[in-house]
Length: 455
Image (cartoon, rainbow, N blue to C red; front, side, top):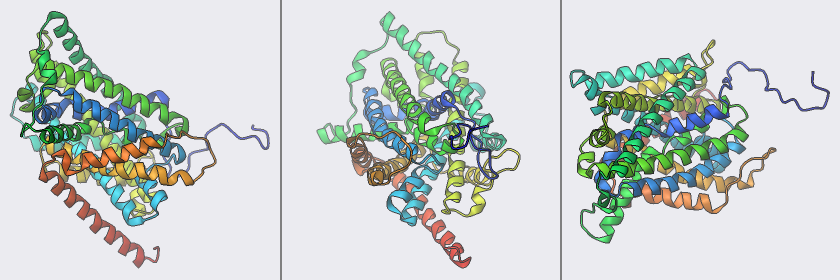
């Protein structure tokens, strides 16, 4: 028994409708790494090469810097407010504008679903074709894929996160194989080092070079998205105030280093035109590496990697629904928890249905770029929010990022979200339609609350 007046270090008993705190420090680090790794590096590396040329490493290096800037803001905010809902919660606390809060939350949710759809499309691409040929309908595969992930999510966060750990180790093994092949190529004198400084600029001018690099960075940034998902797991993490800073910074640093090295190896061994034409670019690297590694085994590893991305994005979106319901941004029913499993059942079903709808709206590149664009807009708002919320004091110590980092984070996010990034019009159109849908849903929800006298 704790003596009177002495704060207890034991966690409070679980309450009805609350989530289970099952994620410790090591599990969270692996969760963040697994969240960032996956579809982006395994599926869009070739499309990034098509935009920038042989200097494939540069967009990933720039994306790494941008990710660190915004990650610092997320770390401060999740330390101050260790709750689910992430960017939506921070936006509401900073600006106290329900409409803006809903739009930000909806953009985050749609970015996760676009990412899961890209992963589903990647699952049914060249990697699967290496194993099964082209006999199975890709759309049916993608839909079945999402349904199975939803079922895993319903079983519980512990099962989902432990599955994430296994898949993370598998996809890290795949990238280690790529790096090993690269090391072998360097030692044996294979590859073409001159490609590493080649740029593909349509007009040959300085402006064309700048836009091609920015466009490649914007698309490549899709490979870095994921660390923001982890803050939506704050209510399922043990001691989140102390656990998150280390986990997010380690996760971004590890993945950023791996990405740059993988990009160097890919460009060293494979021409950027060949990479651009493949939906399984790292399989092309394995084939060109001069190492007798089974192609089918690597394809299987890649499928595990994109599965991991989709699993985490479905988890993120469902927890975001749960958090928004608790903040009364969405109807209370969205926060309903499965009695035995204590998982957000309504949120999981809702986002899975949306993901099934989105899976046929574009190819991997378009869905990946849509994900990155939506999140860059959100990141700009989050970086401003962390500055606004400096005036809001909390009663516990937490990480505080240097002021210049969120300023730079907001500026770089806006630049990469702008037309300077040479983004296809279809991405803006798709994002605009999604936001318009969000506005419609917000209006309906507002009307329902007003009719019930709850507004």
